[in-house]
Each structure stands twice: as C-alpha cells, then as structure tokens.
Length: 452
Ligand SMILES: Cc1ncc(COP(=O)(O)O)c(C=O)c1O
Image 1 (cartoon, rainbow, N blue to C red):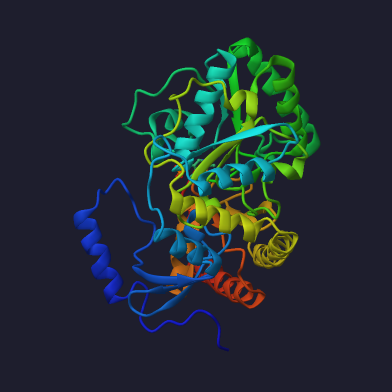
Image 2: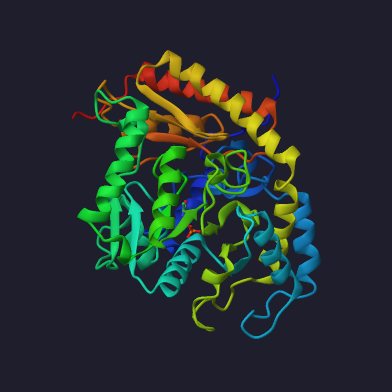
C-alpha cells in the first residue's frame, strides 16, 4: 500500500546523524532535541528529511502547525510582505498588518466586550505580559497557577511552570508571589471518588487555597491552561473553569486562559475554553497562530489591556510585519466552520484508533484530550504508577517506522499527538497503523518497567 511515509534509509539516516553531530558540537546542550532527525522540507503533515525519507509529523512543531507545514496562503502572504517591509519596530511607527492582526484577534477571541491586543514574539513573553497587565490593572501581585502547568522558560514564566527537574533545576531563585495548587486531573483522583465528586472536591480545594495560601484580595490573576499541554493533555472540567470564573468575578481577579498550545483550532474550536462556555478576561496565544513564524499575543478586556503605562509593554520585534501577515493568513484558514468541523473529525478518527490500540494493552491507562488534542497515558500497574520507559520506547519505535511522535506529562509518561489538522484520513490511518505496530512491538519486547 502506498502511503505518505516513504523510507529509503534507516531513521535516523547518515545525513541526519551528521547534521545532528554538528548541532551537538555547535548548539548549547541545554536546548535539547527529542529526535535525531535532520529535516530538509515539509508540506502539510509530511516531512522530508536530509536523507530523502518522508515521515508523517504528529508532533507538528509542538502544536505550531494546526494549519499544516507551509500552508500555501501563508507562504504567499509572507512572500508578498517580504518585498515590502520586513521590520519597522512598532515602537517607532505603525504599519497595517499589525493593526489588522490586533483587530482580528479582538474579533475572534471569546467575549463581546471591548477588547485590545498586545503582540509579542513567544508564548512565554505573552504569558509574562498577561501577568504584567493583570498586576497593573489590579494593583495586586499574587498569581495562582497549577501543578503540571507549563507557561514558558523566562524567569517569571518558569516560576509559574511546574515539573521542576526538567525545566527549573539549577535556575533559581524564582519569582515570588506565585501560588500553585493541584490541577483537577480526573484520572488521578483519590480512590473511591467518582469524577463528579472529584470536580466538586477540587473546587472546594480551590476555594480553600484562598484561605490557606493567599487571600483573594492579594491575587492579581489566575492563569490556567484550559487543556494542559506539557502536563499531558489534561482538560480542566467545565464546572472547574466556571468556578474559577465565579471566583474571579467575586474578588476582581483577572482570569487568564493560556491557550498557547490548545488554541487555534487544536481542540476543534478556535479556543479550547469555548468548550466550557467560559469567557476569560485575557487570552494568551502563540504557536499555531503564526504557522511557524514567531508571533504571540494577549487579547482581552480593553480596560485591563490599557492599564499598564505607555512603554511598559512590547519589544523590538513585537508585531513583526512578516509574523503578522502569516498570522492573518493562518486565521483566515482556521477560523472557518469547515476547518473546525474537519478538526473535530480528525479528533474522532484519531481517538477511535487510539482507543482500539489501548484496548489491547491494559498499561495504556487513559486516552484523553479534547477534539483532536489527544494523548495516551502509560502506567505500570493498577495504582497508576507512571511508565516513562515504555513511553520513550514507543516514540522511538514510531520514529523508526516514519511517524514522529513526542511525549508529554508531568511524569513524561504520555504520548501526545499534535498532527497538522490538514492531515488526511488516509494519513491518520497510516499513523495509527504505525503506532499500533510500535506499541505491540514495545509490549512484545517486555521493555523493563521502572519499579515503584
Ligand atoms: C501552554 C503554554 N504556555 C506557554 C508556552 C511557552 O511558549 P513559548 O515556547 O512560545 O515561549 C507553551 C509552550 O509550549 C505552552 O504550551
């Protein structure tokens, strides 16, 4: 059967290995790489490596490629813009694509109130700006975040990020006034509690934190990923997000939805928080917004967005013209009923396939996510002891067969799937066949599970 995957060498091939060796010699080891793949070009969901192999990409640039690799409309918009204006600096002067992007984001984000936008270059910068805006608007400093949360690698966002060993070790001291409570992860609820009871119990813990950890009058913002990304694609239950909304309304706290990974169609809606019917005060966006060009944004209530003093926000490259036209072309593609309906279909097909694989292996404890933002979680036993060893082995086995997958999860025991949402049914089926074979192979090899 001819599919998208075409392998002409082993993976990684000799040219990939040579390129990665040069990388290892020239690039900081702190900027790690998950595969030994050297890539030459990509289109849609297919990547061509430097040995001429074609692979299916289910890592999607870690959630950047909802509209696919090199979407033609985005490529064409960049080509046109590059001849006209590459950089001006929005601090120096105003150019149309920047204003048009702000207007578009004000239009597509949840909420009918007056909105304004700040453009930045990365998710971390945008999250950090959302905190600055919340503090300026409220005159308070406290920020509430969640275990398993990931918000970036600058000092402030690293302070907000969880998973100490991988992201934070050796980099302190961290910023103060960050408060962290458990995320309502239904899979890991206390024994004897059903999911509904657990959500109610988690809401009580949230309210308790307002006594035990910080007074609400000291909280500037609650920052939550409606679906945790790095944390393992864990959706926050709708009633929990509604409880945060009520708490914020009661106490004048800014509700910030970090949609950096889950936004832009990734869950079958433009923004993942729409599934819960909750309207946050500020939305933070990046990743799939620019189809790969570095662009990020904070959009929200105009009165909050205008709170910082002029000059307090922004940066040299913020709102770069090339990034803005890429984002405008990406939004034109994603913000359509057809694209979002197809994303939902991708999710159904992928989930059904993952559930079939999981049914063969009791150590796949969960297939979860929202729409096409899906992951499977691996454990060693009924106590749900995480199994990062088999998880890594599965991602390596899929890569050897031409399917790029990556891990996630507080315990690195989830395989997450972030395919370009322009992936075809045939490509989904091909990826599922490869994944199934890889999982079966790892099961048959009896890869040693860690103890305890
Ligand atoms: C939810 C979330 N917030 C923030 C970030 C940081 O974004 P960036 O890597 O662009 O700084 C990420 C990156 O993975 C993310 O997933």
